[in-house]
Amino acid sequence: MRTTSEHRTLIVLSGLPGTGKTTIARELAAHIPCAYLRIDAIEHALKTASGSTEDVGPAGYVVAYALARSNLALDMSVVADCVNPLAITREAWQAVAAETGSKLVEVEVVCSDTAEHRRRVEGREADIAGFALPSWASVLRHEYEAWGTSRLVIDSALMQPSEAADLICRQLHAP
Image 1 (cartoon, rainbow, N blue to C red):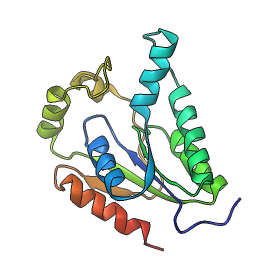
Image 2 (cartoon, rainbow, N blue to C red; image 1 turned 180 degrees about the vertical axis):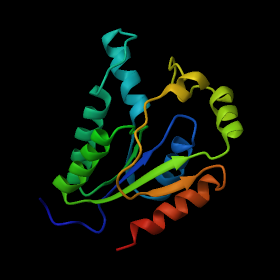
Image 3 (cartoon, rainbow, N blue to C red; image 1 turned 120 degrees about the vertical axis):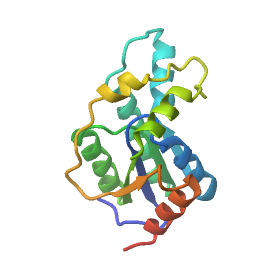
Image 4 (cartoon, helix red, strand yellow; image 1 turned 90 degrees about the vertical axis):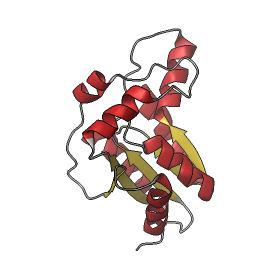
């Protein structure tokens, strides 16, 4: 394990589709020098490259972990934008941070206003060409394990994306 660099941080934004992760991640990426890894983009690229419409399973996350390691090894901070629904995926991000001697900031983005969350899911348009957005029904069925570790929880129904990004930035400087 390497010594932690003050400038090297892995920020993992987690939460169900439509909670605001991507909006907050983009706000962060506009304000701090970092690599931005979006699981949706990685998974869509894998499907496009293979010509498949099937779920790529853990492949998107495995690619993201490798890209995060590479960037963190170069002393670049990384913002990862992913549902991160399982303890095993959360543990894998923790391992990436530990292996690279990087600070880890885990963020769970929630939307406590169910009507607003549904409006977001049903009203958004894909920003990745050819990407199929999830339906509200699929969001409700999405497997999402409860967290067993501490993390910063951001309720996007109560906080603007810029406020959320500011809060996360303050966590970068916390001991």
